[in-house]
Image 1: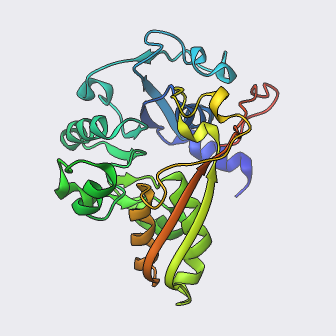
Image 2: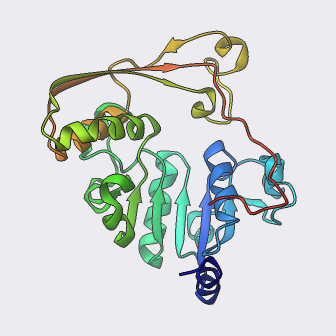
Length: 266
């Protein structure tokens, strides 16, 4: 099918209405950039705790002039009203509130927090430090790694987006697991950039501490460990252990101004 006919077909279809919550962060910026240009999606609401009432460009200058959407801070039920899809980049506790509201509306959920990535309640309690308040939902979420679960994701009501470290490590080791060659203890040292720590500076992430420095954090106890082990084991790996040392580095993903002369990729 030609690009023109493909575009006409998409235009004829009704667009999926999307509510994006936690939209003022770095992940929110990238999602907005893609969704606002996607021919099959319409962003109807952007939620955030900061910049409330302001245009999204207040947090994301690269989206200046692209949309009239403003940040809103609404209760969960109001935030997702009328949405076909709800994408969440919010803390675990807020994710649970939104999922509870979505159960009554039929909206499909893509959750980017760690609330539903882990395989069981015991793993969640160990790595996230609290008892999971809705353990019965863990089995309802499809693990959102397209290279592994593309068709399941397509049909899923609830999707748990993998963690950043987990995605990289799994994509590197899944071929070995599927070939039956991943056996024994796995040792990983991985580096993340400063944008991975989020938009709000903390005592260990702001520039004076992070610049010209490498720092390990949560060695052998990072929350992504549980989902990595579960994913590789399900794919055929025979892991006796995962020794994962994360490192933060002074690297940033630079935002650029959109090219007004052509459509951005989505």
